[in-house]
Image (cartoon, rainbow, N blue to C red; front, top):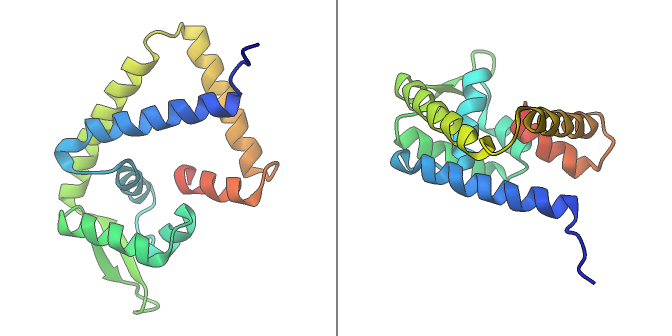
Length: 156
């Protein structure tokens, strides 16, 4: 007897497909989906440090530093000393980083429209509502700490 796939499995498959599709859309900028997410976070919360980002993404500070260095080499991110603690380097999008992000957002909006075009208006709204509820459950601690940290990386 064939078993119906688990919901978690279905979400994972869709997530991997979305990640791959985002990277295809952003190939011209040589950005990974995580780098795109970092740019988006910095656009919303200017002045974070690399260490703060590493905690959000649950990666080592060295891994995050490598990612930030790559974005810095592309001219998308700059670092400046924290006024209160010169050992802390604060991150900011450059003008180039902002303009790249605008184009990335346009492409990701286009991708989202394509991916959900087969859903009816009610289906998309229901899906968004269910996913939002799951996100809130994770934020409120109804799941493991690891799930909370993973969610914080992409939603804060």
